[in-house]
Length: 242
Image (tube, rainbow, N blue to C red; front, side):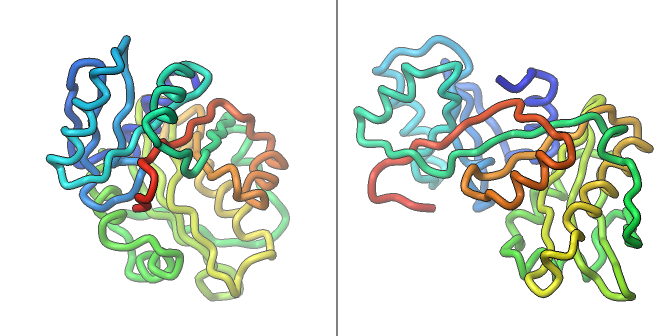
């Protein structure tokens, strides 16, 4: 299970538009920002009859009922949702490593510019990767310290990422390398650059998440010495896909 400090930092650095404590549930309002910020999660003991309360709360927000489940900590909820016809969507793995470990330099030349607010080029790169308005709004909501990270090589932009810090933990999000610049090691160097910014800004750990199906990214994180610190998936009603 992800240590609580890492989990809290991940939530703080990619925040929902609003949250509501409703009995045993945390209800997130995402405003179109994706599953991470639009899900319900159990925060304490629950009864099966209370699942409907979470469903109704999400419907009132105009959101499809969606639950974030950590099967290692709440297998009963996983089973109860499955019995109600909720299918598993987007299993996710969380990785973390000390910023000192990740920020070690590599021989390939790369210039990384940490700045805020994001330059137009960052927004262009993110848009190419499907990261647009609603997700950019999440970055705006995140508290400082935070940075947009623009990577350049051979005098051209080759990647962008977003990082923010909560306590002594940095969350890395929206790492995007355009198709034409992939398989050249730029993702690795951008991640190291983000860790260097985080270290300089006082963060001791860096955490990120990736879908379990993204095998190339997972191989990269493992090769950098990052460790798996948690897993979760979503449960979504059959026939719904947002």
